Length: 213
Image (cartoon, rainbow, N blue to C red; front, side, top):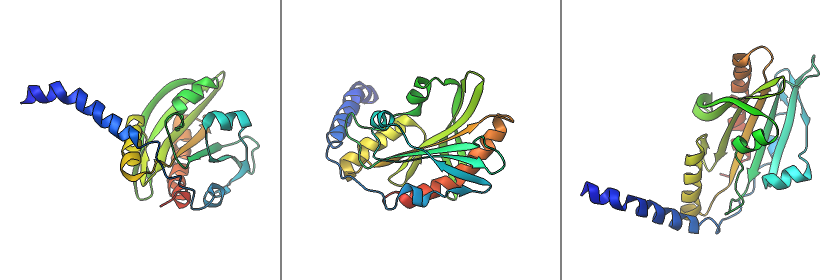
């Protein structure tokens, strides 16, 4: 019986994937409950935000519908302490899904020095995020990013894809946000990670305020 199951398992998985994929083009576009810039604070302790814009080419390449891009700077220093990017997709269809930072960041000249999935405390629980260390020339930066939507915070991109197919087929919903924090590494990687973690703790519930229920 077990041998028979494993013999048919690939076909079962493939069939399930085809059935779920059929629902991805029949989505309800879910608008935000409130604008991202209304939910995410412009002041973060001693840091104040500068609002930035994607170029038309960047926005087109990302396929994003709504987004927030900010650099947060301490009042006593002109160098930015961290940046926050949130890209929101009210629906995802075949060929129009969230682009992973794993592909975008190296394409902009950054080299990965290491990555892993970590848990950070946010919204009363530990949530999974991706932790990256990147380098470009003499600059190094720590990046945290995750996917948030439909009641979930997720880091693993395979799980994100599976949840997308399932929710598309069963719920007719595929809205999701990509959330990213970038902290330049100046005093050490762990100092940068501590700052990024403290930002993530407040950013996760702030993003939930904007996402559709």
